[in-house]
Image (tube, rainbow, N blue to C red; front, side):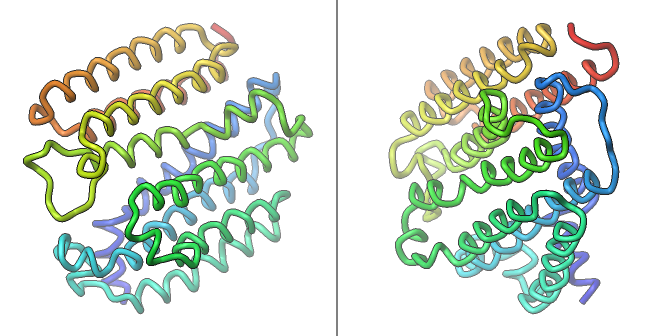
Length: 299
């Protein structure tokens, strides 16, 4: 079983990179909230380790749950993947989850100050895994799946923020915290849409937003979400680093130009590749903003 699980994680969810990502997500939101509230003395310990691990663990669970939910479709369209190909079994993954989820919940119950929010997060994840008891409606509707599933990033952000504000006795609801809730939520939204936008001649039986609404309308929606996202980023970095604001402004200008080029000729490149490059640079800019502030202060 361990060999089969190793195959799965190597191809579908590389553990070390995803663990690092979990800590980057948790750390970005954690420090953005604290620095914007003037907190510069931090008490880092086991709770922060569990915070990042919980993000990693939860995203891992979602990855496996998606493979379960899309099993029939993957057998037809992505038969090379570990689960549809039989190189890993559903039983293997279920046994792994029976260990991962209780361990994560136990760590949160014992050490964390926001266990209620952890329960809410995992409750929402559980509802996602069973299609909110509406499988036949949601599975057939790509927009409905987006509306019901994408908010999970928002809820995960609230889990991180709740821990931070409770630990440092910060006001729970204010402009900064509200905008921080949308950090990584909008990127998850426009990435999810962008990866399902194709040129007309590239469409298959796989349902995409471009097939449903046309590639130009779908691209316009992704661009709109990118603009919403950059406004939240401006608010979160404005008091920390003005250079970051300028970098983000140039970056979003390039992305909007890229969207326009794709609408003119959708065959020249894959939109999701450009969106991923943009998102990586954007999030690195946010992380760099935190690091620079910690090292040299406000710029």
